[in-house]
Image (cartoon, rainbow, N blue to C red):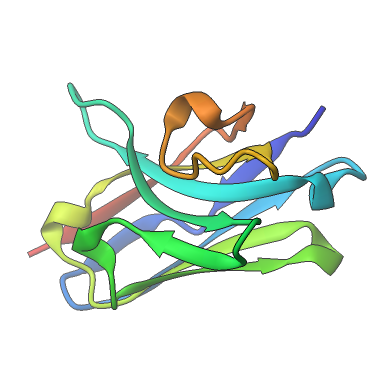
Amino acid sequence: QVQLVESGGGLVQAGGSLRLSCAASGRTFSMYAMGWFRQTPGKEREFVAGNNWSDGRAYYTDSVKGRFTISRDNANNTVYLQMNRLKPEDTAVYYCGARWKWNGNYAATYAYNYWGQGTQVTVSS
């Protein structure tokens, strides 16, 4: 069992930055690959960024490439999403998810076993 708690959301002006954190409980954090998703009202949860254990790479949706960076601190069971040059269209509730690391479907919501409660990010124009 893994519990995930996101933090770091808030209100920021366009062009600004935020860093989201996702703290994981449990001693099996190393068994999981992590991802970030976001959701706006009336829309499905969409992939933002994720790590793929098999090739060690990070993957991003096209709209955030070059602006967002996912990173991981295994010693502290935490994954981060650094978000720079934010745009109003980045406004959403952001969720972190954990999936078994052998599951390579980093962009699929159904691949994730655990989710956090979400943190709101609002970017004003």
